[in-house]
Length: 466
Length: 142
Image 1 (spheres, rainbow over the protein chains, first blue to last red):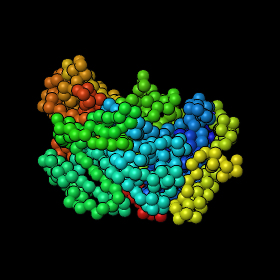
Image 2: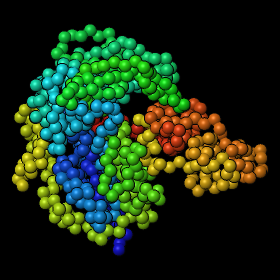
Image 3: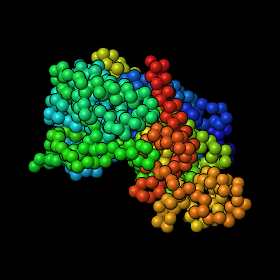
């Protein structure tokens, strides 16, 4: 057999997952001229871009502009996209091993971490990501139901997803109508009777994960006043010392912004957004019908670990907070893929710099790799996945040079396509996607919105006249 | 970003040595695994010290018989350990300030990994690179 990576026998790579990491990896694989690579990218959804389409908030369109770079990658003649093809269901690991030299998993962190407290599964308590998927029109979540007739919603966490959820709950109909939010979510949210939205941080303002632009935006909402307790944004001695030592301007600024909110007077907007610090829910309490009605919060204090990092620990003070709707946003985890070794401790594929490891020998599994959140866990911004993908791709090229690749029986593009066509006749190609994209944008233009998304898979296929 | 994200892509590896092992064997392990430090653990797996190449060099400079000594004779006992939720920035600061090049990571008393200053520098570089790239895409991508 010809050496893989030549014009006669290109290196055939399957990428599982069409999120940012998949594109960054494809770019690193294709944008070099030492090795001839063919990339086939698969996603279980018909549409590409992963969380850029279905995670990034609809009122943050600017962040979505990164897709222009992804489309450039996809325009490469040796790149193909197979949307609506699920790994482990439509195509098995054995199928891929028969058609590709290397398989790269970029499936992200698809599930929420649990809070691990009593009452977590009461009705009215949801993972924040379900709400995000719902308002962004994720085909799997269109039927999700959230009781927006209650007066108070509590979002547990102060990371960017928590902030997105709180902000979307506070937005007015006019604000939301200018976005590409799913139509059914726009309708439901414009009938929302929520008056108060809480964000709960377990540590203090200096440790909060949200960024300064995000917290500033919360102070500029058309329909909600922001409220912060002065005593909760006053820095404790440990935080004050840490901020002074690090001289981190962003953190200083963040605390200043929050202290500014603490002395703001309410202006009578219909909703109030309350940001709390140094509190953790310890129990959700339901009514007789099993619906959440309140939560018990414990007050935390900070202590320094041996490295100087500040962590929370509970004090004896607690309080009750009435809440009819609870969203947890306390971290994310990857989901194991069929036949792929998993590292339960961190919720990632078991790997060393992106090389998938055998759980028994701790040696690399030939031909299998991971990149992005399923490799390192859910950290960083979209662009953080670019150097991450580069690290994995470097391992892939190193292994190719050592001859440590799979030996597929059918290492050609045509037989891979024939297999996909047999399993999923209605898969969506990149050309199909670009057509859908145009249609969505055109539908949006008519309404003064960035786009109106196709939600149901059948709807997409109908638009493509299938 | 915390140091768990570094451990997540190191495949649960932490190279250990027993305090009563000879330095000769410890050097063999350092060379075999191509690392700069080994964590000395007791029978229960709790870290009791760290042996770095620097510890060995310091001893070898004054003592020809270093190879026959035991790990416990020259290891550093006063070890600063990290926890997986410690944030990267604080850890980076502490390691630089205190000139620590290897940080054993402990969870509930159990050693779960090691983070080197090289890991920290690389992760920090990738973090900044990623942020820069994202900002550039937003500014130029319009």
